[in-house]
Image (tube, rainbow, N blue to C red):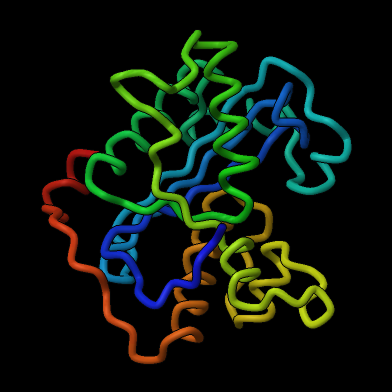
Length: 217
């Protein structure tokens, strides 16, 4: 069960994906967005695209506005990977930040983004992400939707909790269904939630060598 946070962890990794569709069983990520905040200050980010091995559904395309042709056209100006390389890069980023004590923050991030990553890894990399290198179940996850439910359980007072609605409620600039933009918006929403829970909150003290780490990630 989600708890109310009264402090912002020292190291946060915002994470979001845009996808070919809504099923974690069969769809793929077509973009990954990561952003790291240390002591509430943005320090690092990465955004890249993936050419999927299946079509983008019309419904998903209406949300993020991307076609496979759009993704192909990003070659040369953006980082564009195949499915295997995109998965491998995402797993490395999550692994490295986990090793540094980071909390992964997102909207429906555990049930959707990370579960799709895990299932895609099983089918493409033959790894369930439960091995000695990286066990995804050990990630420290903060879901801003679940956190908001812990703060205000009433669905009558807060009938909708999707990221755009949380951004509007907390005065955060929405990400616009862009993976990096939504990752940043999730972190900003979380920090506003903490401020609401406990004005004058202080950061946790976790042992990280921040400057060196962001150079090597």
